[in-house]
Every structure is written in C-alpha cells, then in structure tokens.
Image (cartoon, rainbow, N blue to C red; front, top):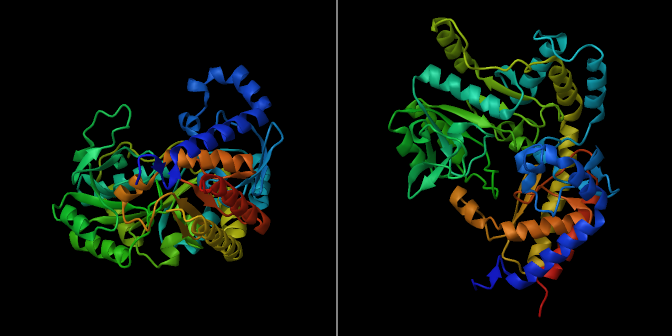
Length: 457
C-alpha cells in the first residue's frame, strides 16, 4: 500500500477530516470544557481513571444522565449509546428491574459480610443460566480471574497459565504477556512490574492448537485462560474445531480450562459457552452480569470444586489470597437476581441479536459500496468494523489490523452525528433497549463518514 494511504484512505484526507470533526466536537461542548477546566485538576492527569484520557475526542463530555440506550451530556447532546460502558451496561442503562432492586435493597443496607435469601436465589439462577458450577462472587472480572488462577495453581501444583497473544482478562498480572519471535515476553507497556512474568505465564497464538500442545507438553501449565472469542483489539473468531481441541489438549496434559466470558456474554443466553456447548473447568463473567452493578462471578465445575475442597482441607491456616471485603454484598445479590431473572432473558437476547444482525449487514454493505478494504465481525449482540481485510486469525494479525488514527477520526465523527461507539476497537453493542431507528441512524452516519473519507477526487 502507498505510504500516502492508511487503511485505504488518503492520509491528507483523513487528517483534514479529523481536524474538522475535532473542531466541531469542541465547539458543540463548551459547558463540558469549562467544567473540566475548573474541576479536573484534582484528578491525576485530569481524569478519575487513567484510561478515560484515551478517548480520542479533544476533551471528554460530562454525562448528565443515561437511560436505556441513550446518554446525554451536560451540553444537552443526546447520543445513541452503542458503547454501553464497554459491556458494563450491555443490558441498557438502569434496566427497570435492576433499578427497582437497588432502591429496595438500599433501604435494607448496602453490605453486611453475611448472605441473604437473595444470595441463594442468585446461586440458583447462575446455575440455570450458565451451567452446573459451584459459584463465588467477586466485584470485578479481574478479581475473578485472579482467584480462579490461584485455585488452578493450588490443585495442579503447577506455576504457569497459558494465555493467548493479545488477550483480555482485565488487569491480572500474568496475562500481560505476548509473543515476540515465538517467545513469551512481558507486555512492553506494563507499569511497575518487577516479577518475571515468563516464569508464571506462557503465550500462544489464538487458533494455534499445535502451539498450545507444544506449551502444554512441558508439564508446567496449571490452566489455559481464554476468551471464547478474542476481543481486546480487533475481534478474532475461533476456527472450526479450536475449542474442541483446547478441551482435549487440556484433558490430555492435565491443565484446567478457564473460560472468561466477560465480553462474550454478548453471544446469547448462557454466553458463548452455553450457545456452543463448551465444557470448561471454570467459568468467569463480569461487567454486565448484574445489570451494571459492579459484580463478577466465577464458578468451578463439580469435579474441580471437589479438587479445590481437598486442597483447602489440607492447607495450613491463614488467608487464601482470594476475596475482598465488599464482594458478595447484598446489593450485588439483589441486582444479580433482578438481572438474571428479568433482563437476561431469551426474549431480550433475540431482540439484541436481530438488531445486531441488521447492524452488521448494514455496515458491511456500506464498506462494500465504498470499496473499503475493511470487514465486519459479529458475536451475538457485539459488532465491530475492522479497518483491514479479514477474517483475522490471531492476536498478531489483530494488532496489525488496528488503525488508531482512522478509528479515532471515525469515533469523533460518529459522536458529532449522534452515535457513540467504544473508543478503543470500534466495538458496538445492542441492548434490549436499542431501537431499530438507532441502528439505522448509526449505519447512515457511518455511510456519511465513509463517503467523505473515500470520495473520488
């Protein structure tokens, strides 16, 4: 490709478009800019969580309110929200059953360090939704993954976790590894890491069963920790037979298989694991599982739970290194019950998948019409357009396909036209509250932007 082009777009045209859109965004949001200038200095680098600075707009909007699939900032701009808190609000902002549960529980107390009747019902519903696991409650999927790995290492007596290059498992230290010339290395951007992560983790490429077997043959891998679909950069789908192969290899070499569904819960009722009848030893899901209340769950299948109980009975007294004081609080259980029983339903998933299919086909038609060298990927209610040809096979290809300059310009352009998507990887989610008109508006906005970027000279 010409050095004057990026993702099929002339670089000068992209730069001009990005400048116009940034100026239009800033001009339209003077209240947010003024409020940030006055109050943001109390936070490190002006943001309460450092990755908020990674949004590509000239400055952040300040949210006034959100409901369903709409979000409104203090400047009065309404946005059709397809980001939905990067999955945290995948079932919509403040679903009525969850909001009602929060109000009711708030009158009875926020945290006790003791269970409630709702806790028992939540356990039943988790099994009904995701399968026969023995559950534990955490606050974030990072915690859930960390605790699951601790269990895996204890019951296998092995030190390493196998993860895939480009994976996403929250901020678990061991997962911040990648591949360089076929060797596992620590992720270059990781801050403050003093331990040698190559002693506790090994990286393989997604869809590479031969590479997985070579790693497992060494006999030091306690668990394979994987997403069913890679979602950290540009989405990578599993090839036919990949998950069956992982299951067989994990059994052959005595490693546990942990399925992290924190993003792929979009796949359908029961997540990708349920839809595709996968058989992991442990199951993890967070973010939206309680309708937006910070909650994660991790479960052990009965055989793994028995191995855990045997190890627990033999260990010395003292702290296990698993659990946080505010986890398994009554507010989480109230929201879990409401979300699992009234929001995470087959009917809502059918609505989400129908509109996601409409969105993916609409975006693909726009891409084809403009002859852009891009493609679209969908996993249930989750859709991404990727500014490179596809399909992608692994994390290395996904990283190469990532086009930050193009994605940032399109993101700002979509906001200016009333559509919000995720800022990091062109991700769009459909919620139960999303309407057909919102989907069609997003497709039209995408078309308008590509018309500008790919117009003939």
